[in-house]
Length: 317
Length: 270
Image (cartoon, rainbow over all chains, first blue to last red; front, top):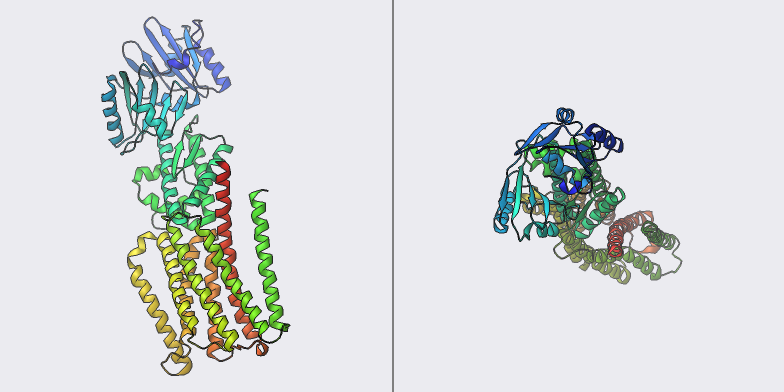
């Protein structure tokens, strides 16, 4: 089950009221998993910043998505296991708790799993793999469109990895059978919207840096990346730019905060670039970038650009 | 010492040095304290310092670019362009000091023409970098620009002398070439706005003004080559050239300082 790792230390067997636990976590504004058990049935609830996630997972022989509030009322006064859910695991949890119908689990040999990775890379749309083997448990995010996985949530080390070398080593070296669930992209789900924002941010930044580097050379492009990295460090944001690539492990509680954070980071980078090449050229690069995107991607990328750039990146300017 | 403070101190030192040299230049020009050709020699040396300083900075800027960096080609073109200008100016100064009057055309003009070729190539490369989609017509546009500059120069010669010839042709050619460079520079400046890359381009505008003044004075026989007989019109022309090279020097220095301190920061981080 999702999150069993996070519940390990918290399954005290005591009878907790679901409603009381919800109140405790709400007060702390923390993220948590609550698992209520009755006979062979399980109800799994997600709390995001203390608030009950609208859907929960009902598990008996199969897994079903149910209305969390109704289930909470029905499952009052049963033994509940609960545990904090770290922020880095929140996006995967949001997707896990919203996918309907939940994907089937499939067993893969290491060789077949490797073929599955290739399939995820060549898919047009993003997807998330939840893999469990004897050695490991992980969630891997694939942007699709020929790109390799860009984020792996490594449960055993407890971190969201975005360095491509580490991502590759986490995914490619498995020696035992792997149980895999594949979550396909659903644009209406918050978890996927956050992921799309992350991809838009990375794509906009990487395309901009490539063009900027052409204009001013490698040293000045590196200088821009260092300035953005320093800014991100000051804001305690897990993002780093190196050699024209963006390694982004930012996960925030909600979509609005995520958008605002990406907007601020991008605005800072563009302001720094403006000092060297001027605002008009920055806007022109962004305009060219926007023109090369599909309408959907343009809307998504437009969502993280500040107004002043948006005005100048509309066709017809 | 913080990077911004060091940068500011070095920049202040640069400005003070330039200001001191301008002051000495003016003093010698106005009071001719050394007498004979010595004043002319010192003025030419100061002027050559203004010309060579941007070259030194350009040379150092190149260190911060990889061979495959596209902007390196732009800076390299500028280096060759200003390098040839420096040789041309040195030849011009030598003729000026040894023979009094500099004929037109002189040996210096060959260096200036080649210098213009490199400066124009540098600006066109910069344009290509900024507007990669508009590359296809650029070769034709460059050829047309050179032809236009030559035609304008002949036209101006004809207008001022009434005959088709080479008398004063080069003075007008430089003005026409400057004008074309300044127009391209101005177009790029509009794109770069008030940014770091826009600053050196101001030099091209001032260079156009300087060459225009010089061309008009020489072709109207009012440019006085002998310092003892010189008036304020020559001073005005000479100071315009000094100013153009100072602007290039200061702007290139800004670019160099940014590269230098960024590279130092990167080394410190490692």
